[in-house]
Image (cartoon, rainbow, N blue to C red):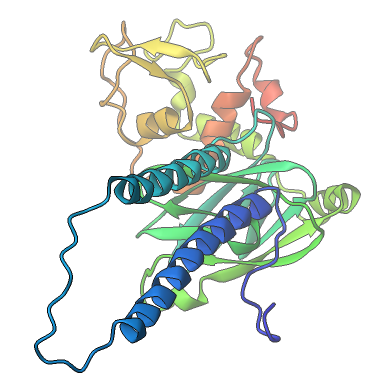
Length: 324
Ligand code: CUA
């Protein structure tokens, strides 16, 4: 707050003070040199002022110590900023191992959030305080950008690929969230709020009304409805590879390349299956582009994630909250 004007959003995540401290440091450094330079310019302008129209400036041939000083000092300052910023940057872009996973889709002009247990919400996101949350999202139409000012985190929602942001909220309350990329007529209306709750209140909220199927079990239903199950047989004898315990593993492709089975690869394989065929299989799978929306793709990914160990379909029904 400055003279009653809120200059900065609240600091409500573990990242927020770190981003702000770096920002204030850079402001302080630039302000310091900006002020020193301005003062010296004004001072010299007065000190060496002359009315003599024939005055000639003194010849200055250089000064090694002075030149070293104005090269080395800024260099050291820039390196400090670089190292500090790199440290903050990596923390912003690398989520911790254990996160609460939430999916989101941006579309003109709303944000839809999808919790793994099946609960969905629009332009509102409920999260527990003190727990690392990772939001994985994409766009169904044009570029959007998901921005949580109070958490100091933001990423573009890009059609055709997944982005993610993560944060650990540090204070219970309601904070603004909005689209930070001009996306058409109602861009300014693509706003919402994130509600940070105490963990018990969050649990109560999660189990309250709705009671829809978990995301993974919704994916399981789609897996049958779309007949994926006819080729991706669990015991590996089908026309497509078995998906049991495949998530997170490395797969060899017909091209000889190796791919990690992650969100992006599963999504791509559903929408563009001919692109990266697993070695030993024929390019038989049809595309599901246009047949499944982004939310269904997310459900299918959760199902593939849940298809672990024994490979029993029943496992998909178990609440799959943690990132694996
Ligand atoms: Cu979506 Cu601006």
